[in-house]
Length: 341
Image (cartoon, rainbow, N blue to C red; front, top):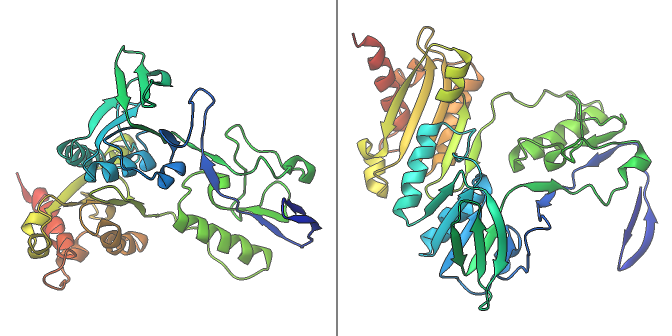
């Protein structure tokens, strides 16, 4: 492995195993005239020195939604643009609709299902976004957050016998080995889910395999945390997935306003939702929006991982007052639905 930098001479490194974990960077298409002041990506926006009065966020994925809700909380007039008709497709849509409600309440304008025509700047340096529908959005700042690119273009992978796929990502097996067995890859460079938590575990498992250390595999049940305002966390199957798979399911809901801790912290609109098999009562999914969602989800993750049933929450006692009580309330709600004629 040859390593070179502007400040040092070229250095040759050797090792029996190599792990490629170079991460990713924001995609910057040529048709977007980035100047990193008024037209930024999700990295350069962090260096802004002036809080703008208006902003358009291009991209309705995790990063776009996080930034849109964050800047809206500052009182900035935010427009959220995406070519798709819905946000966060991998999240239970009831939770997504709750997020959309909160974002609109905070003044976010949605421009979904639109196609981009061009991006320019006016005489005042403001970003001018023209859509194919004829709409024009003029804002102080444009934040482009539509995709990321794996940091592999400077690695000369062809010299090592490795060929990226069509998405510019590296193909790996269950042990995170590339097509060259002693070279492993983990994290954003191998694609979905591209989370910090899963990437760290992928790297650990790759090293364990390389040095013949006893290991498991990456869990099939993974939690997702989305740091919007309010935050979202989800683990397991959504209603949409269960419907598509033809699984007989039921849901149970608990609203924070029903829970003493929700009233104490002032979150009266939070929601914890369970999906479970209506025949076996097996817990299938946990979906949360509200204060502490990314912490609260781990209780459900543990029950899911061990194949637990929804009545686990009914037959156990939770500290009072805590948001964890939502699990018991949601489980009771779901089981009561089964008893209805």
